[in-house]
Amino acid sequence: MQRRYSAGGVVALMATAALALSMKEWSATIRPQDGSTISGTATVVPREGDSLMVTISIKGANAGETHPWHVHQGGCDNSGAVIGDASRYKPMSVGPNQAGEATAKVKAALTVGVPYSVNIHRSVSDPGVVACGNLRPVAGEIVKEIEQ
Ligand SMILES: [Cu+2]
Image (tube, rainbow, N blue to C red):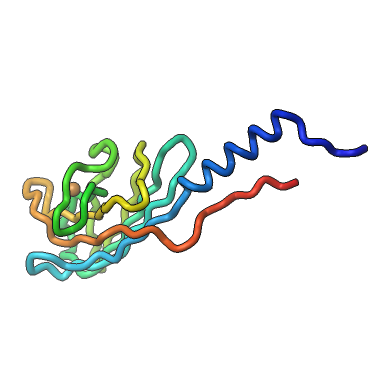
């Protein structure tokens, strides 16, 4: 049986092309700030439904401490509003190995060319920033081709 593209198939291909442009992974190298020894990495991966999966991993923190963290608009030198609902970023607990990991799924999208950063705050009661990393788009698009 010969295969033909229906009108519906064309629409699906166009939708995929638009999706490919917005599907871009981001990463940040987190560096200490304000005298802390916290460093680490963070990644932001777009998911379906205009949401982002944010993953953060730090080391060099004090065991037992709890650090709120978020993706913010603006770079580390000039950060602004939290991206997405701040309550979706559960504070990160630091284990006995002085390391911590956390993930957050937030409803938001990042735009290439706009600065964003990942902030780690001193404590639940002190929003001072003790580590930060500027998010940069990872080279290359995440493209899921339609199989034909
Ligand atoms: Cu924050």
